[in-house]
Length: 218
Image (tube, rainbow, N blue to C red):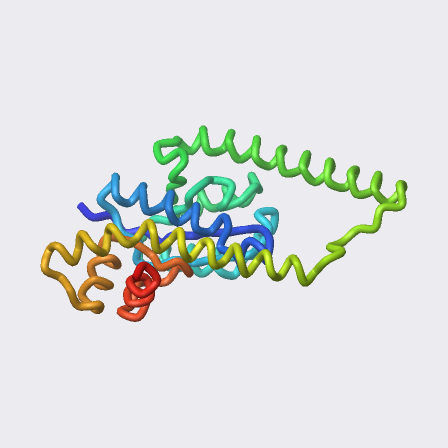
């Protein structure tokens, strides 16, 4: 039976969201899980927000869709869902099924333990960061990015690199589909979507997306 999933990917900073760093790795983990479990993603929700916050609009939409249609929530790693034990416990009690690709067979008890550890780790990271910033201030170190233009340039370069890597990864799959006598851009996009692949921006494939990959490869 082909299981239906709603995927949720999250990064904590806007720079990761712009560059695609983190999001792409999560999507790859989800794609590997789908290929091994004969499942498919019916919708994806992407969020740029701290895992400590429980009021995340995209996650709320994903959970609501799972509740209304009986889908399973799918995340690459448990900490992408939340580093908040109370939140995950509440989710478990809401009868919404969810799977973390890094530990797909974990029991509710194991998930409870993992969340408790993740929550403690988040607190420790926050405390270390605050202590480090205070130490820098005492030494007179100027905080913030001293070269914002360079930061923007690096983000653009990272985005281009991600596009090239995505093209390199998807081209053999597209060529395999073409070898099966499916040559139209629309037809290739349809096959990719049926297999559960997502574009680099996390959206379903369209004919133009396939065309862009082929042109970049050429």
